[in-house]
Amino acid sequence: MRTFDIQNRRKNSNMNNQPFSKSWKEFLKGNPDRKNYDEQAASIQSLIDGKETAVNNLRHLSDNKPLVCMTKSLINKKIQLTFFHTLKKTAILSNASSAFGLTSFGNRAYAVRLEPSDFFKSSTRNYRAPSFEELVTCTSLENVRNLVPTETMVEEKMEFHAILPPNLSEPLFDLEELSAESVLTILNNKIHTLKSEKEDESSYVSINNMQIGDQDLLFDDKDRTYEKSYGKILKFLWGICHLDTAIKSSTVISCTAPSTIAWLDKVHVENIFRKIQTHKR
Image (cartoon, rainbow, N blue to C red):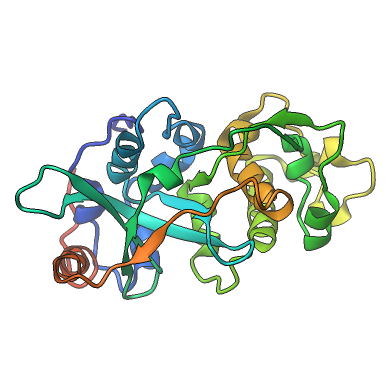
């Protein structure tokens, strides 16, 4: 198996070597690096470094186009999803680059212009937030709504984005309702499913049989594998639900400029509108 370094993805992604797809969701599900991304979910959570410039962080996303970025929408307590992030020049006489992404996972995606400085910020003050063990038990809307901030929770800064590995982005491809609390429950149930698939059924307590006080039995993460892989994602969603003013919305602007439309058409043609021969390695 070839090595896979999340921080040093080559510019010519394997996305261009996969078979023909009828939609972006099918295309992303069929990406050759999908399994590798899932296995390195913890590395994905450190892909964005607060010490780097916003443009450099966007460049990391641009080098990993199958990854979906989740940010807060301007619509009350909703999220927005972007992928195929790209930095491209928009002026002939300037070396400056603008950030773009795609949104919508059907047979036609839409181009949006991004403001990197919005995406990669975090709150200027600390807020009380639940532990991963508390967050991961929120498998229903009632659970999410009842997990309110308390004085016993640890104070920490809240990030304004979350990067999803493929195994967590795929459950969202067909969603019409992107409320933070709905997405949080869906992803938590997916995480429980991923865990149960890796463990012997006799040693795993079914989520449907959970009783009060069973949390430790229900989700044993003593080595923090799941927290490192998914903790930031769950905390971001919970923050939108309960600390709405702490999580700032990110600017995503629909683009209809001729140059952007031409780029969008090119992206579609090169990736899902024509049959591409599978690359033999």
